[in-house]
Length: 337
Image (tube, rainbow, N blue to C red; front, side, top):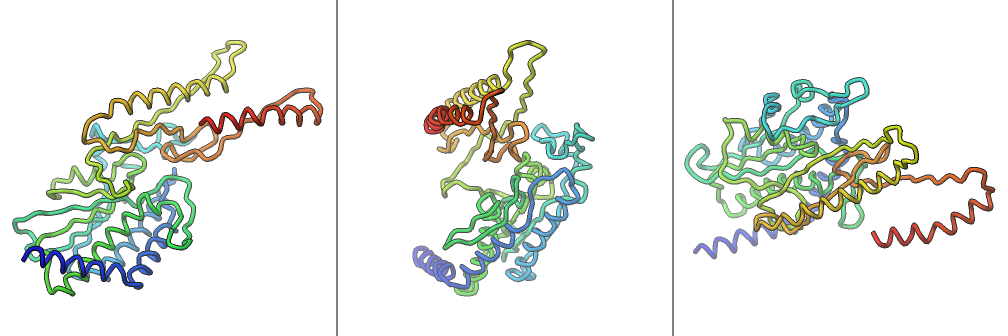
């Protein structure tokens, strides 16, 4: 009997997913969310405005999918998370005028997370409560989305607005499933659409510390190639400032290159410590996201660094000849990397 019910459920889900309407709905929704710039900014008012746009899209879809069978709550980020050891100061609020950045109360004023509870037939009673969590914020810089064939490109298309859309798709599939088989899910499902994941996770931290919220298990949407990652090392950010301390003959470019390589070696050591069976197969990554004026976010791959070589007094022809001699060296170094 259980096998028969499972087969019916799988067939009903396959039918919903295979429909052209479902595919178009998923594509349009992801493109709409990717179009919204939810990257971190020193202007936290602008961040709030963009987060609200993303939440408005989610609320619209929840209303159409679930109607009165869901409760939707905007839960402000509690500034008291600042006292928690897992709190991450919002680095993006640091400016020349305010090098220390904003406090939690300042950075998160009127900002928060969107919680959706899909009410089950036994809502509030005993049973297993599942929570789904993913984030609407993205790393900088923002770039708009586009659809090429069956692939959507754009900031956040995978990390993690794709997961946000997957959560909404799950709502749609459950709705279709209940209609097709005339059944009702027994327990509540708690959907957590959070912000502040990329700068350190303060959005989810605020949710986790809220005593009014409980669940038995949580599935966090991230990019894992559908592999389960039960544990993660998290992220450690660093900032290194080099100076010659008035010493003659010190080349800071050469020094910086050695520091980067030393940090790569340290990353390899950390990777070697990740032998616990709960850690994912994905290796520990060492990412130098910002070097001087180049790069937008510590966790985003730096896609451009310019190195200028000057030859004082050289003619244009000599410069071109040196360029021809250096090119194989640079090409070989890139190939080795």
